[in-house]
Image 1 (cartoon, helix red, strand yellow):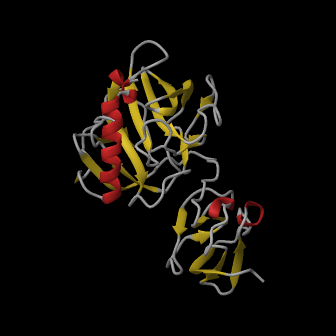
Image 2 (cartoon, helix red, strand yellow):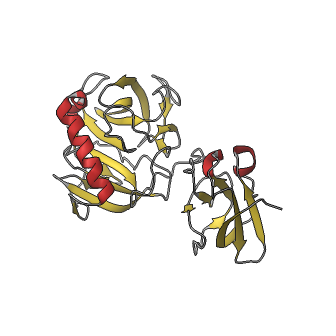
Length: 289
C-alpha cells in the first residue's frame, strides 16, 4: 500500500494540521461532471442528514473526510456507500484498519484508518447496503494522529482486490468531488437507506435523532442553547463516557416541560421515548432529580 511510505505519512500529518487550522486548501463548489456510465450511485458513507467536510489535500482523487467544521470525528459511524459485498478487511501500516467493498461492474470503495479491527462490524463475503455500519472513524495506521476517514472509489474490471493504482474521481449522489488541493464544506449525506444503525454520539455532546428507531436527522450540541428545531425521538449522551463538567443534561421543549439525561450508557442512551417534541434548550448541569 502506498500509504505506508514515509512520504505519504508526512503528507497525512501535514494535511492533518492544515485541516485542524482550516488552511491550505481552496474551498470550492462541487463539479458538475457526471459519473461514468455504470458507476453505482455512491453516497457519503455516513448517517442520513449529517454534514461533512471533504478535502483532496495531497491525495487527489481520494478524499479525507471529517465532520463539518472538524468538530469531532473520532468514533463516528461509517456506512457502506452503496450496496455490495465486502471483498477485503485488513490492517496496513499506512491505511490502518481498512475495508474494501465490491459494488459490481468493476467498482470498489475503500475505507482507511477505521477505529476498530476491520472485521469488527463486517466480514469478507458479507452483503451490505447503505443501511449497514461497517466501522467507525478512527486514526489507525499513518493517519497523522487525527481522526478522519480516508475514502476512495476505485475501478478494476476484473478481480476482487484493488489498490491505490485503481483510484478514480469520487462522486456522491452523482456529483463529482475531485481536483488538486480542494475542500468542500457542509456536504450533506443522502445515504438514507433504512434502517441504519444508531449513530455514535461523540463524548461531550448530546445528540438527538428524528427517527423513532434512533436514526434520521441528527442534532448535535455541546453548548447550552442549540436553538434546535429537531424533533426529538431518541437521544444519546456522551456515548456513556464520563467527562467532568458534562455529567448531566437538562433538555427543555418548545411544547413545555424538561427532561434530564444521565451520564452513562445505560441511562444516557435512548432514554427519551418517541414523541416528536421540539428541543428549545439544552443545559449541562448536576445530578438529575
